[in-house]
Amino acid sequence: MLTLRVHKQLAEFTLEVDVTCAHPVTAIFGPSGAGKTTILNLVSGLMRPDSGEITLEDIPLFHAEKGIDLPPEQRRVGHVFQDDLLFPHLSARQNLAYGYQFLAPSERKFHPDAIADLLELTALLDRRPALLSAGERQRVALGRAILTSPKLLLMDEPLAALDRELKDRIMPYLRHIRTDLGIPMLYVSHAVGEILQLTEQVIALNRGRVLAHGNFSSIAHQAQILPLLKTRGFEGE
Amino acid sequence: MILPTSEEYTVLALSLKVGVLCVVISLPFAVSLGWVLARKNFRGKLLLDGLCHLPLVLPPVVVGYLLLLLLGRRGFLGHILSEWFGLQIAFTWRGAVLSAAVVGFPLMLRAVRLAIESVDPRLERAARTLGAHPLRAFVSITLRLAAPGVLVGCLLAFARSLGEFGATITFVSNIAGETRTLPLAIFTYINQPDGEAAAARLVVLSIILSLGALIASEAIARKMKS
Picture 1 (cartoon, each protein chain N blue to C red):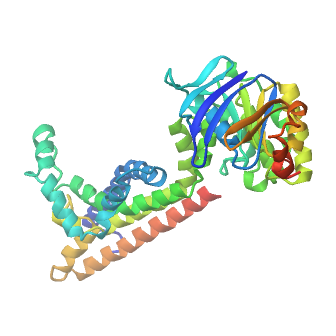
Picture 2 (cartoon, each protein chain N blue to C red; picture 1 turned 180 degrees about the vertical axis):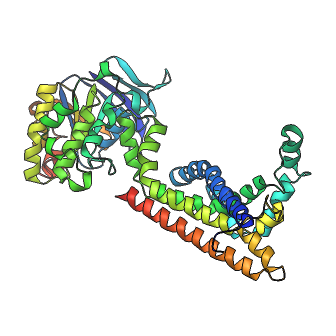
């Protein structure tokens, strides 16, 4: 369970979030520039809140009053970026093993071969990222994050850079991760259609504020959510 | 005789020693400062950048004289090093290394900084989220990707040290077997009657050495990029 109560002054608005994510997959949706990526960066430790606290499975990752601020490498949070950010000088196999190598054997929940098999990467393992397609690269990025045996997987519009066909091909892998590997996810997207294939639990965000939080079908009719759905909510679908 | 004489060997060995040590000493500073200048924004960054590049635009004689003022026997630092540690810098081969390092440093720093700037900083952030400590992330990702540029910086500093003359002769003089590197030896021969043939041999040696270093570094850089 992730508890997020943070305040962060950004250039254009103040991010003010107070939510608890208890479901296997919680999605954050909202228009571009709503603060979605910032939330993920705050959770993974790449950005620092001005105040508040972030707790994951009862372990404080950040607590302003207590002076706790775990560095990213100690948070055990996997982060999949919109651009895959694979290491260009390493092969797919070495990319997959990058985070895995830092784990003590007792902390390793998954084996690289099993994850490569699950994501259908086995035949591509010796290739450098430059020789992989966009979809293949994103699958390697996904596998790389999973192999750190994270307590939470942050997905920052992982399908945004892919075309429709590729999105449809990767979605089953994401459902595999949710259902078979049991890693909780915080999934960011501005495409509601994509989100609903993974979860019903959503946080609607706009200009740094949580407009609604809960089951999509129960919040979709709310007056403040409808404009997001009509104007930009289905962008990319 | 095509083979170098023992005197030429001495000059060559000293030049290589000075060149290699100058690179080895400068590299950690160039990488740290290159990283700071490439990745950090702070007050006084422009001034630091200017100070680091100063030896590039100052006449080498001025650099040598400043080193002499600082590290000569009566200089502030030179006095301390000599009294406390019995270490002599001025008029020794160590001084030759230092003059070459100071004069070549801006070239190395510039290459290293550009190489680090060309690496996407988000890659290092991704490495951190995968569990890498900051230093590990820097070395395994940024420095590795910047390696061809860092190598170019090393080569530039090495080549500059092979050619270093003004700062060296001012700071450590021209002592055979101690501070007489290739350019200083060539200068000495040119000033001697009948020294032209010996100077010409050293000139050829300089060209072979510089060309060898260029080809070797290009080959290594290509291998690193592939």
